[in-house]
Length: 573
Image: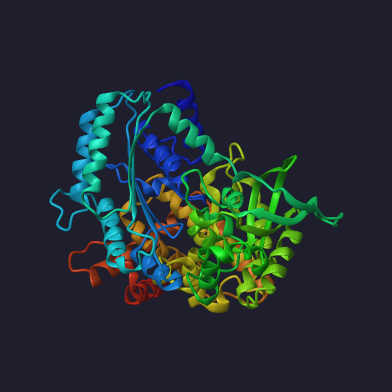
């Protein structure tokens, strides 16, 4: 392995706490991170994407990205369909080898294996991880009537530490593999590429950077000085230039840019159909600029040279619906201009107020604006305010912490992760925690991210999740229990602190501090987890004839109720 790739791998393994693993395992996670990050802007755990081991079909990592989110359970696919009214998917397959060259036989074998994997009746044995991924793809295709933009795309990457020179023999093998997969007629597009050290290094650098884009903003006016705002502009931008802001290098829409936007894309409701009709009718395109309310962008950094603007760490805080329709019609944008408001500020209060104000103007309800209120900023500050050994980081914006050197990335918790963890641990919704996080938040209404909530229970939920993953990663807890991770988190709270969660702030703070301290303790933390594992075993024996714990086991309320009953019995002993 060359010096640069080795250095990147060492840095990555240190930040992800993988130094104890063999180099091959580290490299699989590293390649998963690099490749998946090129398709998904948010924070994720690349270790969870690995599928390597016995009966892995030469697939070392895999991910399913649906409607811009990484999917880990079939229920999330159902929730996304119900929420967005469409499904757009990319299936990512990675083979990662530390060898210094490429092997034509490996390319052919991988294609053969994938053809079997995606068949209706696969014949090759599969590991449990691959079977779970197969379940995801099966659920996806069961919802094929929702493939509004076509079938899923298949992206296959064969990565080594060597140099890809475009060797004619290997290129023909890759082309043949691509053709074989295309012949299945279940993918909209198929990409089969070989990546060497130089390519994977480039992907790693890109993954570490915050979102950046350059575009021409010719028709703009600099606004007068505004308190808390470094610079602000208003004007119109060519729609083709605007595409540069919302498209990633692969030509996909950057879903993470709309993280602070209060609504998902609502598919083609009456309003969005009207926007699309304007773009599709040649005589109306020129009027788009006066018919549309426009888009608001908030950036943390900006560089300007003439009319060329470079934005870094930015969000589309208003204009999610318009942006998605423009993206869908990107081939029909000649002569189309878009009203654009651009604000550069480091002040989070200003950014939040802009988001709230612009969305208020589009009649978003007070309930939808909840996520923009003070609690989100409190959570970010509260998690970081703890001593370094007990500090976690709440990622409110995509890649918020990605470029901080030496930061232990396993300590970053995203909004989806926090919603699921909090729902499981504090609301006893362990059986629902694997659902799409926005659907879970909708189901529990005012119980998650409520304006009157205190940060303490969110912090201790994050601590419990971090510590449990640490125990899994370091083999203190058998990986077979991973499907029940949310039931384990729930059980820990009921076992360690059986009293109801207090309502008063002082009592709540003491309650959460006691629980967090026990979880952080190097002896008591693992002991707490080990105490509740027999309860999980008992519940599995009672619900599963084959005695195997899997994702289907944990999706029922009955299984979760057995866990709660088991904790009560354990407390009586």
